[in-house]
Each structure stands twice: as structure tokens, then as C-alpha cells.
Length: 506
Ligand SMILES: Nc1ncnc2c1ncn2[C@@H]1O[C@H](COP(=O)(O)OP(=O)(O)OP(=O)(O)O)[C@@H](O)[C@H]1O
Ligand SMILES: [Mg+2]
Image (cartoon, rainbow, N blue to C red; front, side):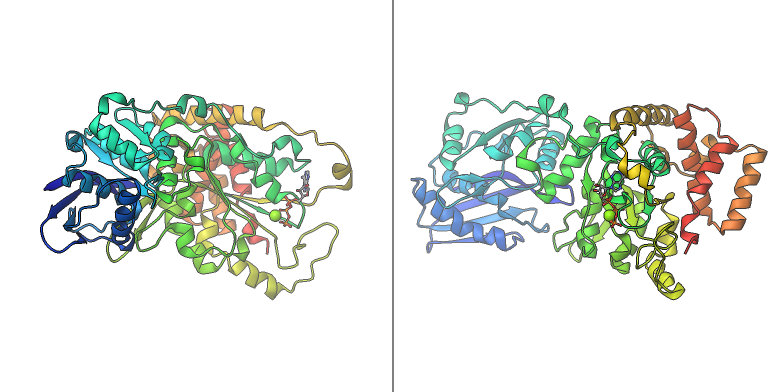
């Protein structure tokens, strides 16, 4: 008998409906899988055979042909174990076929028949909703993740035998209820800005970065608080909206990184890859492309600590995504697009010994050493970093006194107010000032004669590119938003320009 079970496969961060056709017919016993399966799908044959036997079902001693459609898309991973098991049970008439047309089946099956969670269930549920599919049958550990999508009924099971019982007696089972409501209220960030002593200039830059989504670099001697400050950025960003959380979760789901297989990513992502990171781990890659750190930081922060320690060619990969907000990963078999709208925060010492420009410790580096050090950060990369901030060592009296800085909650309120102003202005077309295009600049960043002259002078003196000058306008817009000013004024532009002076200090 022939059975057709529906399942799905991940392509990028989207999903594709896949048909699993199973024919159990006469001939020498054996199983063949056709339709571009990868090794994990091939191995499915052995897992399913043993699992069915161990779960107490008869495994048909006949020729079994498994065909995955559409045949031209490569299928990967262990998620086809469950649809294949169900198909064999139906084709060998051990369970009822009544529900097969309306449900998608996904899940890895252990040798004892228990179901193990898989990656990418959320995008599959989202696709199922778009296709008007009634329900999803998944391992219980994936159920909450899938249940985020409202218009699809999700059934989570622990064992193959429960799935078989569900197929025979669906009326006995209830779909899973989503617990998203509870999750969205929890916010957990490590560290509060109130712990940071002094560094008013750096705190201000952090607030501007949060309010406008601008990229930021802290440059300063060891122990001045660069890492400490950068780690506090997510805590002053506004909470994720539901749509943002859904997008972020989709990426984590595909990467198999959803914490405890919970439902939604509820906190702003903060990713801090080590400086030994490779290009593909940063921007995405693999023969079945997986999202990299920049996509895992989507709607959040990508923190590159000790920026000059990263390999130069790896940093070059960041150039296009920083401009576009997405990255295209091309492989011979497929080319996929991953979203990557992140705020880049970087930190570095000003020179190899770390003390160039320090008020106490003399720098021991030669000019040539400093030049080589900065050469690692190519012009094009620094050009994309709007806020370049010197973080100097604390004064002795600042170190010994208690910190008197504002806490993250009150800074976040100002950030939120500035962001709301921007959102209103853009009518939610774009989400922050950093994402403005030339047309927006023309409308929202007009300068009066004095401000224009000031900017022109800075372009000449600092040798700024057209991009850098556009970015100054965006930062000035954010500074005006924080102040609640409708129009750009000369002091907004002046402040924005002074964040552009550091890469000329070496
Ligand atoms: N401004 C500050 N306020 C309070 N504590 C600080 C400050 N700066 C540094 N510290 C203390 O020093 C520790 C080290 O700071 P941090 O790691 O941020 O320095 P850094 O500038 O990143 O140094 P490096 O260049 O070596 O990476 C912090 O964990 C904190 O305990
Ligand atoms: Mg540090």
C-alpha cells in the first residue's frame, strides 16, 4: 500500500513543505530512500526500523520505497524519522490514514521509539500557517516553540506509540496551549549602568547608540571599562516587539539554539563571538547554510571585544551586512538570505601596548607598530562605525568613590521615547534612525546654513567620505530625538561630528 505523509524542510530561515511517500510492496525486504536525502535522512532507515520494532510494531519484511518530494530540493537532518515511521505504520495498515492530509509530522526518533526535538520548528509552523495546514505533530520538547503560531494546532508527543494512538483516536487529544504571555514579561540582562563609575562621555555615546541603532566602538587603555559598558547596551534597549521576537526566534530555531526549547526569544540578542571566530561562523555558512553570529544578533547587539584581534579578512565579511541589514550566503546547491539588522559594538585598545594617549602610563609602541595595529581595521569598516569613542582611565578619586551614575531603567526610558519619536516619523516603515536611506535624510535631516558650513568644514578637515557624512546626519537626528527637538540644529551636528575623530588619532 502507498502512504503519503507531509513534513517540511528548512531552507535558510524559511520552510518548504515536503511530501514523504512510502510504498510497501512485494519484493526482497529492504528500504530505499530517494529524493535527494542527505546522510542523516539515509540513516533514518536504520533508526526507524529499530524504533518501530522496539515500540512493539511489526516492521514489514517487504520492499519499502521512500520518496521525498519535491525531488530537486536537498533534504537534511533527522526530522524525517517521524514522518517516515508514520508512513510505514500507515502503509502497513497498523494505524489509520484519516489525518494524514491535514497534518505535518516532524521529529527525530530514538531507537526506543521516543521522540527527540529538532531544529527549525518555528519557521515550519509559520509556513504551515501560511499554507493553511490544520496541525503539526512534533516532539513534546518542540511543542511550545511551534505553538507560538496561533492558527495551527500543535500536538506534542513523547513517544511514537502516542503518535500512533493520536492517529487512531484524535478525539482523545487536545492541542498544546502557548505560554508566550508569561514569557514576554521576563527580561533578564546582566549588569546595570549604575555600576559604571565616571565615563560620562562613553555613557552618552551608549545612549545615542541605543536610541538610534548606531554602531559604536570604544577605544581605550586596559581596565577602563570598555567591556563593562558594552555589555550594558542590551539593558537600555527597548524590549523586543512581538514581530521582532518572532523573527529572532525563527533564526535561533533554525540554528538549534532556542534555550530549553522555549517558545520566544524574549530578550534582545547579545552575541559576543570570540576573536578567533571564522568567517562562516560570523556571517553564516555550511553546506546547508546556517545563520551566523550576525544573524543571531538580529534586532540586538553584536559585540566584538578586542576588535583588532579578529582576522582582517573575517572583519571584511561584515561590510555588506552592516550596510544592507541582511547577508546572502551562496553555496553550490542553494543561496539563502539571512536577516542581520544588528548594532555593532566593538572595543579595542589604542595600540599594541594599550596605553597610547594615556595620562599616566607611557606608550611603548613605535609609530610603525601603531600604524600596523590600526591597519587591521580597514577604512571601510571604521567608516561604518558612527560613534567612535575614547574611554580614558578613571581618575583615582573616581575609582575609590561609589558610582553615582544613572541606572539602566531610566536611561532606557529616554531611549524608548527617542525611538518612539523616530517610529512615528517613519510611520513604522523603518525601525530606527540608523536604517534611514538617502530619501529619509533629505526629508528628516535638513540643515540650516550654519550647520551646513560646520559639516562641510568637518568633511574637509577630517577627510570624511559621503557615507561618513550621511552617518553623521543620522547620529545628529538621534541626538535631536533624545532632546525632543523637531529640527536638526548646529549643536546636534557638532556633537555627532566629534564622534568621528578617533580613527585619526593614531
Ligand atoms: N568605569 C568603571 N566603573 C566601575 N568599574 C570599572 C570601570 N572600569 C573598569 N571597572 C572594573 O574593572 C573591570 C575591568 O573592566 P573592563 O573589562 O570593562 O575593562 P576594559 O576596558 O574592557 O579592559 P581591556 O582593554 O583590558 O579589555 C570591570 O569588571 C570593573 O570591575
Ligand atoms: Mg575588555
